[in-house]
Image 1 (spheres, rainbow, N blue to C red):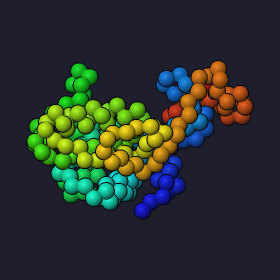
Image 2 (spheres, rainbow, N blue to C red; image 1 turned 30 degrees about the vertical axis):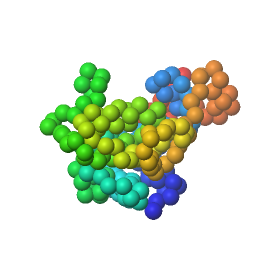
Image 3 (cartoon, rainbow, N blue to C red; image 1 turned 45 degrees about the horizontal axis):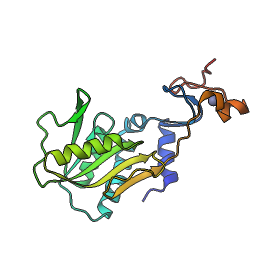
Image 4 (cartoon, rainbow, N blue to C red; image 1 turned 60 degrees about the vertical axis):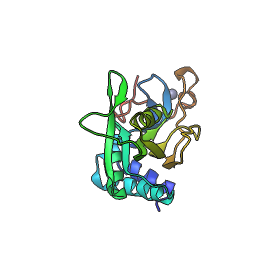
Length: 197
Ligand SMILES: [Zn+2]
């Protein structure tokens, strides 16, 4: 079993997790920047993380017929976790804002699904994916995510497993403690080392 420290190490190696002083697209400042796609671009890391997630899902002792995730962030997680669980992995995608099954994907009445995500923040897309399952007559038996950024606040009403519980503080620029300290320049993620004026 991978420890939280080992999980963090994988994200750091892939530059998927950065520590410093970041200007987020929301305009807020944060000491962390997380981008799961950057870790999942490496098949070796995706395999390591999703086999770990699959193991923890197996440990729940629930029965399942498929894995499903919301697109786009969850597609690789669904595929790779399903591969380890030996079931099919599908995804739901947004059609005019609403998550739906497309591409001939089906959930038959009574089928048991595990909903997976790369990152759970508010849990909104997870809940919407759970609704997709129930709207087809399926049953959600568990939820899994690589990272839980919710601060332990989400409750899906089914067992929830995650590899890394990560608190990501965000600050309004005027009250940002990192700005106040003035030691670390503010950068835009993806343009590291180039300070924002
Ligand atoms: Zn700041």
